[in-house]
Length: 624
Image 1 (spheres, rainbow, N blue to C red):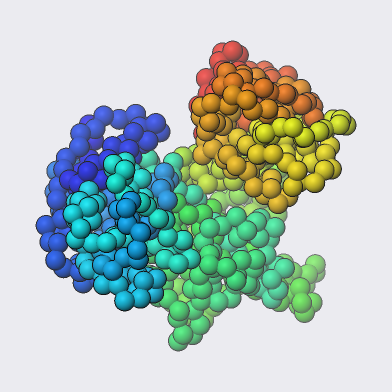
Image 2: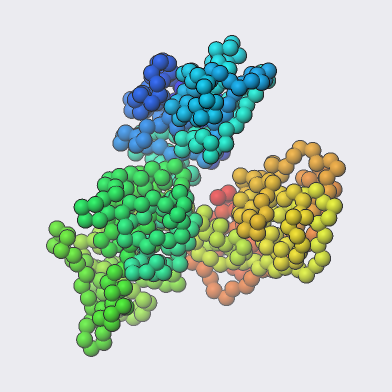
């Protein structure tokens, strides 16, 4: 039984019940809810800018510390940053509109003269938007603020749109005007909920794995921006936040808001190391995909251990990318090679800046013997062993020295698992990204090939067109060469398909949060009577979407524009888990290998139709 704390306002209770409902969709647990107040609820006079950082959380924080409750649910913007070291947290992914809104009575037509605000940020906007108007402080729960407006204490009030939406207040008497983000930028956490618990609680740490993404430590290379690896460049492109060192080459994204400079030069530090480490942990706990960009090879003199140790302490997942070190760049540029047959069998790397005396030794092309640890590289999968026979001729590198005892922690929903990704090439990258976010390693092995069928396509007369996958979008534009401005409403099955369309300048009108046929069906209007809809399909598409639209009154035409062909392999893959994005991938797997190959493996499915196919074959799967 989990004891959950919340503040006593109607909004806080509504937010807490909503969050608990969503959390229980991921993990089944029983709970009780306890209500607390906070200094901010009891003190309605102190300006928020002058209040303590824990003004709205102190009583709940103390209750977590004392064991009265196991966790608390807050508006993320109410948390103190950084939180005290004895508390841990995560931002939850179910987010509301972050904008502020100007709220007035419906019969108000003139410019407001008295406006209620609860922050200097909103007051500054008001002074610019309504010169001469009087800003008056307004505090208290949302319903209490609305009653003050209705009673004539204010002509208007500025408040968060998220609270109005979540509370579901009776707004019949009020006119709500959202304020554009560029006019009034909100605090970063506005519209977001946060879960807080006592540091070290394993239940909540593992629950958090579902909502965070693995931090990528990217080695930027030295000497030239092109010396970064392909994988590293991809990590930067996919990141929400890039935290970059001084020696790191400025890669794509340097000019946008996601790039944070954290460089350190001798005597000139933009941030202390402790601040950088805190920033990495906090950005990860906000659910952002973080790329920590370092110069050279991050495993050599990169202060890497301090940052990964902090993530390990919080049980947050991460991945470390190899890179091109300064010693390799210097050798390649000058001809002073690090090894040369008959002259130098190896090289030593050290620095006068370290107080440590011990040296790690690395032996390439190791061929047996005892002592140290050998890491084998077989087809891109690294296997660690203590001993090996002289007859074992696989590539190996032997490590000996003080750092041999250290190993990266395996955290995340997939805990370092090798996950066989069977999806077609069109969605390989999106599944690979999710596997890595959850702390796993993707093993790419497409089991189906999707090929465009030459056919005539006419979109005239349709009210909407449905794309159920990135492949459907790709094949449609390979077969159709019309003017995109003639397209009707565009409906998709998820953000991956929406991105594929956006790359062609087409922006979808429906993009469900859940990337599946069920997600699209749940997002469709309840009444489609009178609409003509074109469904882009393959020769093996299910009828789930089409049947649902017809049940709601639409006339639906299915246009098969691509074929789904299984791929055969003559090798047996090595994996700990498998992901199936489609029923056809399940069928193709069972054509290639016996079902017994899945014994003891975790099986992940993308959507309920894939789960049904697994069950039909007496296999047990789960949604990733």
